[in-house]
Length: 281
Image (cartoon, rainbow, N blue to C red; front, side, top):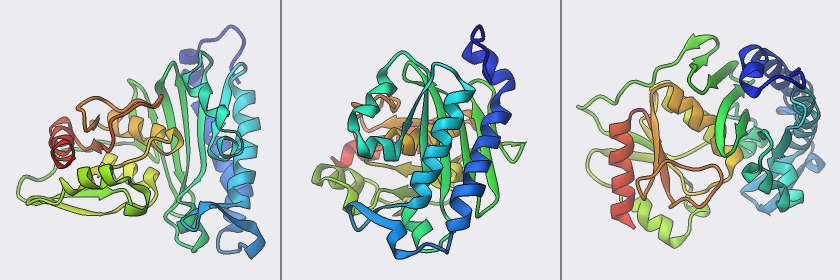
């Protein structure tokens, strides 16, 4: 736990293991016991049939809200489910207090269907800048971390995203058409060109991890919700990658971005993909 006189930097120098423990416990107690065990009454729709929430989402977020808030006195928690209940909660991301940004189950649709491709995402931000992130895929036994200026790691092993091979098409994961406006659809059509191969994205957190691991070249995402992006964007940055909106600017978790945007294995690929998105609009 941070002491009242400690800075966030001092906390991150020794407290990241406490955060990892909290994330693991949330998954062990609230998520994994419900994996492939969900009853019908434990699954609800939010905005439609592709936007689901489960008891695992709610209970894990409740656990993390209490635990993370206690680790860092004076911090606030912005969780996906809390924002759904009260959209004004999101404004804390733009405030002056340290903020934990939480997606308790990223990839709820996969979770509901018994697919292991889901994860828990936690990021710590201050003043709109992400300082640290934790990405945990419990069903896949993968845990990735990143500290701004301190690198990224997967299960304790440093991550480097590398660069795409020049002799093969770029592999890019993109937003599902159901979650894009007409303008965003036109922008994403810019990726339908020679030398680029696209596919629909799964869990955003796991797509970011794939970029950081060099297993995916880039993303093309069309929504701004910080809980989906904050942890993964820092992970990609610290692994050597970059992110840009179609206006050629880094993505801001505080919002107001020109969408779609990309996160890519290296700066050159980010510029290439962002240019294709701008040309398709």
